[in-house]
Length: 362
Image (cartoon, rainbow, N blue to C red):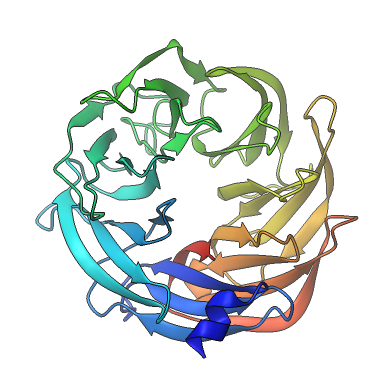
């Protein structure tokens, strides 16, 4: 059964990171079929603490997960070996992240480095990876400084993500607390690979709160979801430099509530961009992408059929979008119309406690 699964063109492993305070066991593994849109449970860890964000190594043999804790329970990043024949995870080792509340993890293209964003600590850390996938203690930790206009939420730095550029030679760190997207040059052969980029940051509008960044498949455009303003910033991208071209709302003009935008991603063909909204909206905003200049045009909205869509993912075929509703304990599977970008209910859901992050592995 597993052999046929591994060799089937339409099947992927779906890995789900969760918060564990309501009974989740940690990381869950499902089979997901990109033809039928159906998912089937395979395995789960039994003791991971708040593995809220996970990343798949390019070798597809290892999974890295943060433990989003802090204070008396120091924050960690974990390495897991993944057995593709059984779909099971085995803990390899853990390292301290050097800051509270880690909320994002990424792996370099050459499998040599893992980076972690410490939201609570306002820092980021870089971990050397051994040949067996295990992690060494961080070789570099950078503490951000500063604040911004919202004294409740931007009283200090809050690094929300670490994302490698399409070519892997830069690292981008959206900082919700300082209203900056900080840019680092990444030298994969250096013991301390991070140094300030020639243009070391992009300043967003005060109070917008940049959260996540994604790059267009053509490598020429980048998009930043701004959590607190409920906006997407569109940029031209070239060699580590972001140049603003547009800021567009993720909600209707007459929306009077508090925005709570979370995730941003593009369809595999780059024709459509999707942005999730939590709070009172609980939907996915759908935009078309102008292929000539990268600008966005709103096409519509889709309810996520749950509460607090923290994260979503589009499968590589572009057939489905899966939305993880953290506060209603469900992952909802939508069919994508590749021509219009719109989403359609399939009736398929996965029930799991507090899903936060989705990743697909072939």
